[in-house]
Structure formats: C-alpha cells, structure tokens
Image (tube, rainbow, N blue to C red; front, top):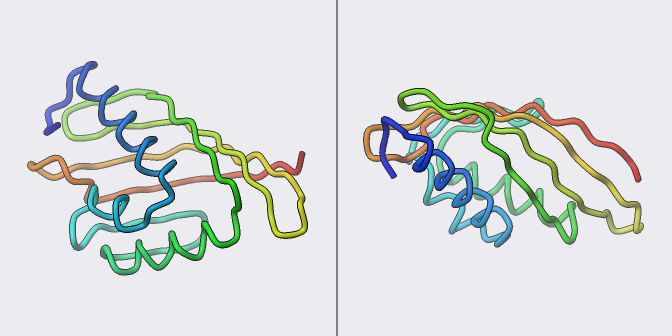
Length: 124
C-alpha cells in the first residue's frame, strides 16, 4: 500500500500495523519502516531499523502479553494518524492499559519514514 492513501488503503495500512505489532516480532515490525526511519516514542528518540528492533525487544520483555488495537483517525496524502490502546502486565502481575496517538509519514514505496507516538499508561 503506497501513498497517496485512500480510505481503503489507509484502513489496510492500519490493520497491517496492528497485526505486525501483535506478532511481537521485532524483525517483522521493523520491515514496515525505512532503514533510516525516525521515531519518537514517549521520551525516546530512535533512528533506523536496528534501534527500532532493539527498542521493541526491550518493550516486549517488559510489557508481557501485549495486545494492541489501532484505529484510523485520519489520513491525507502520505500521512496517517491513528489512536490506539493496548493491554499488558509486568513481571509482578500488575495490569496496565496504555492509550495514545501516532502520526505516521510514509515514503513513496509505502514504508514508514517517521513515527511520532504519545502514550499514557493506566494501572488497572
């Protein structure tokens, strides 16, 4: 799915991202991003697939039984905005629900070159 996005292709892109993240496979997830992709995730700033994979390994080692739902917010040209929520627990068994928004920007081939995420956690 390459830009410019239509409603159909934007929805498909969001579903593909949700499916990849729910696999909890850093290698699979990283393939959706450009080799020099830029991320802001909470207070972390990442650049490139290697940093993305390392981040995801750390994330899923801490956020156990991670389960994500993404929802399309809007799209235009090569950009998509989503809302999301995910559940997880830590090693102590505390349950969390995390909520947030992401802004995505894609290259001409449909790979994400920029991801900006704002996330809040709620202890259940």
